[in-house]
Image (cartoon, rainbow, N blue to C red; front, side, top):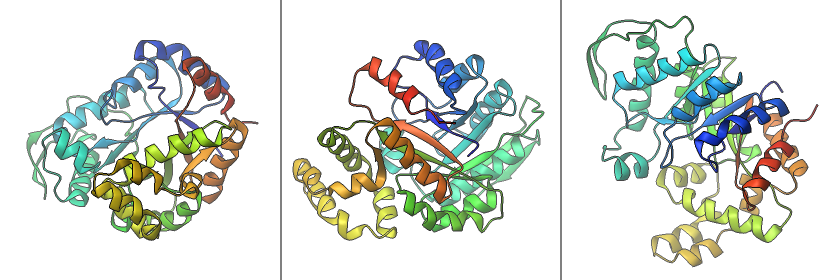
Length: 320
C-alpha cells in the first residue's frame, strides 16, 4: 500500500492544525483529506495544510452545484498552485439536503451536472477559453487567469453504477463512501471499466474504542443521519441491504427517531465502520485495501476528549 490518509482533524480549530498535521505526517500519513457540508469549506483547510506539510491533499468532496463553474475552476487552480503535484480534486453530486435545502439550488440531473462539471474543469484548467452550453449550465468567454504547470487529478464521488462508470470514463478515479470492505468488490469493477490505473479512494469511518456499547451508539447515530438521505438509501438498496434497513426507514419516515435507532442491527455497524482498538481498526482498514481501495482516508468518530483524539490518530498511523 502506497497511501494512507487521515481526514483533516475538524475536531480542532483550524489555527491548531499545524502542529497536529506535522505530527501525523511524521507518523506516516501520506494524505490529508477535507470535506464540505456544514462546517468549514473544503478548500481552506487544505490551503493551510499545503503550507504546513508535504503530504498529498484531497477534497472528498466539493458539490458540483454550489459554486459557479468559473469560481470552482479558480478554487481548484488555487489549490493546485499552492500544492503542485500533490492536490486531488474531488467532485460529486452531494445530496438534496446540502444542495437544495441548505443552499437553495435545485438538485436536478445529478449525473449530468457532475459530468458537465468535470468536463468543464478539465478544459478550464488547461487555460482554454470556454464558451459553451453544457447540458446543465452555460459558460460564456471564461479563461482561467492562472497557468498551471501540472493538472490536478480529478476524482468523482460515486455510489451506484452510472456514477461509478462516469468516474472511470471521465475522471482519474472514484471516491467511495459508506460501504463495507466487501462492497468495494461490488462497486470498483464499474470504475475500472473506464480503464486501468483509476484511483479508488474511500472515506472510512473509524470508531477506535473497545467499549462495544459506545461504538454501537456512535455508529448507529451516524447511520441514521446518513442512510435516511435518499441518495444513500438507494445506494444501500442496490447493495442488497433493503430488508435490513427497511425497519429503520419506516420509523424515520414516521418521525420516531428513537425507534429508528433501535431498528439498526449491530451487524450493520460492524459492516460499515472500523471499530475496536487502534490496532484492530487498522486491520479493518487493511481489509478495504485488500478489496481494492488505493487510498483509505480515515474519518475518526471518537468518544473521547481532544487529547485522546490526538493520541488515537497517532496510534492509527500505518505500521511498517
